[in-house]
Figure 1: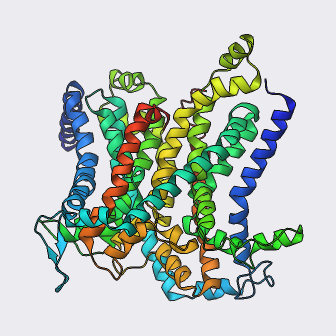
Figure 2 (figure 1 turned 180 degrees about the vertical axis):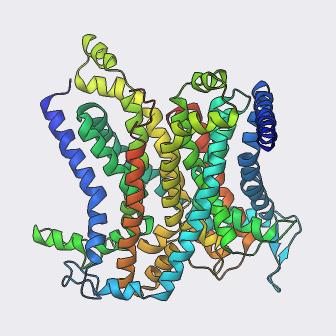
Figure 3 (figure 1 turned 135 degrees about the vertical axis):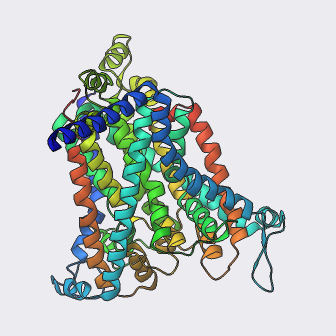
Length: 268
Length: 304
């Protein structure tokens, strides 16, 4: 269809885009092994000494623990609420289904500062009860924009499976719980795991909304941001950033594999 | 005897469960309601209510002596926002950057997505998909920081330019740096929906276009672009909105304020004025509302 020249130029363009996407990521990983504390290119020498320093950095450690806690709670909430909404929207016909999708997408479709400042003023200025910043406020913020991640994954999976399966299960004498446990759950399980992994990765990395809900607490991205702003402890930042890339890339790679149409009822 | 009673007890409990599930099965609205109340309740309380409080607090003010919130209704914040040239300039700068980044990403993404959807083998397509997906999800701060290291005057870009004998660049901490970094970090958000839109075009459309005598360029212009448009608009919702709402990229690689920086400083920084920040936050909110309304008309929501 396309001429050979077009095909070749498209191929070259694709290669360039892949390089554009990946060179910065590879580069930042190389910097983690920089022996010097001056961040210039090429790096002065190869060393793993900063890994040791970063590992023993108490601030970075407690920031990591807080981030993991927040991501764990936020992912659990998103998993429950996202799955419930997805099941309702794909299994029932009712007025306003599009509105629900729209409402769930809103926290990631609206600019991050808007979500951040909205939550901030809600916690401190709502007429009923003032909520002081704590792990709870971070989790509320993260869960709010993680719900849609789980929701999208489960909706996509449910759309590919027929309702006749659950009807057959009920006809064969299974009650609602058994149908859920032995029919619905196996169908959506990989979508659930993928959604959870993506939500976890998103929560672990989020910084724009978090700065507005964290108060004086330091999550790992806030620790990184603070050091980048002040230009402090950069060798350790390099190591932590390397660690964060690995921590987010692994779950996402697993999630990508899980959702690669490998459900037991794949259509194509 | 005991085991019989146990059996009977088990039977009643299982009958009760069965009856409950049968009752639920007969009343689908009850099941739908049970599933919907928790997620909708969460979103209404923690998101819509939060947006409402934000909107209301935009009409409050700060007592200039005590620094405390005054809950009296006033338009003063909106007045400052419109009349002060600084804030106007920052708003236009932000919107302009969002538009530039969106256009750049659309231009980069379209040929890439076309190659992915129509030329690449299924195997290569999967690989490319993962290669786009991973940077999208990998650390946002890391990717900004990487560009800071690249664009620094003793960074990788100038080193490469020197190697091939080109003059040095001095883009670090300029608008060019912000434009590059924004386009870089949001690019996957554009590629994925455009790819999804192109993948859905049936082969027969291309054959029909050729049969009707269209050359490659005409097919591209009259078949590919119109059908890719919902995907481009869907991607642009993210590139546009994410740029509007970002204050970290400008503060790490730029030299000027964006809307987000003003909001951040007024909420958490030195100039403690939440009502003004809330009023200023309505600017990206209104821009996005208009954008979403237009996007909806162009069919972008089906392409999301």
